[in-house]
Length: 325
Ligand code: SAM
Ligand code: SF4
Figure 1 (cartoon, rainbow, N blue to C red):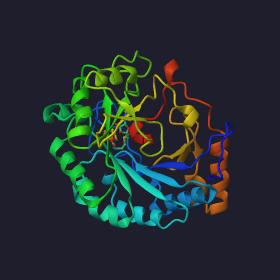
Figure 2: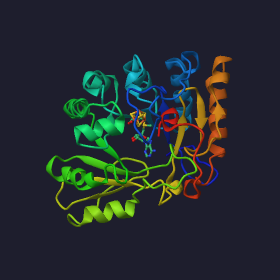
Figure 3: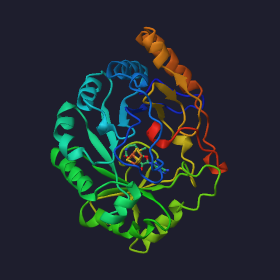
């Protein structure tokens, strides 16, 4: 039973940790082509500091940790961090969201260090289009990374596809059918207008439409939740894989929100879409003890807003790669 509850009686048991703002891709919906002004190395939390925050969070009731970025696998020694987090009492699930490019190289050591599972972001199965969306990625690298993750047992390996109108939405059926033929677990995510602040979200394909297009292939049946979080899960009858829908824009899932986010520069963010942050790096570097960090985490939890304002067109000041999604 979690001990941490926010002001709206939501249990908070999940911490997403962004370990870097750096990335080896430049996805069109996440980063400008030239990248973003990078945080200095000194500004980024050291592994010992991340560990201390995670330990304080675990003592308060956080049981699940996800590593994200930027691209988490570009940070040197990430396996060491996984091992450190795996040693924290009370943490029973460590996962990672990655673009998969470097996964083939690291999958086995990550598993051994205590990583449980991975989500791989993959928006196209056409090499040229994949390259265009990521501005530099090679599809084969990701597919090999995914295979390596399956081989070493980082299961379930989930695929996150951000659906972008007139860019990759014609691939919805292909991704959906892979849940039958190859037992993939695919999650379709609504495009969020991070790069198009203040403009109408023309690239959005609402989850209702994605689902309709999939049901043209065959009726979906509800499936048990495949992990924690905002996705609603379905499957084709008899399929081994599942289909998840994540609708941050058209169907607010804030009522079920169970998470806090730690940015790479040590700010605790109670809500993805709100710029309110609590600084942990300053106190950490002034010698804060676990009890002091616990107090700041409690403060962040109490200040969690009831819901985000994305529907009203409000986004946030940071890029997605600086928060970790
Ligand atoms: N680099 C890693 C990756 O791509 O998986 C982790 C960081 S990335 C910011 C985390 C997730 O955010 C990815 O699944 C990505 O597709 C998603 N994301 C980034 N920008 C988005 C946007 N504008 N709309 C919807 N999802 C977005
Ligand atoms: Fe990098 Fe992930 Fe953002 Fe793509 S979505 S640019 S891989 S951080």
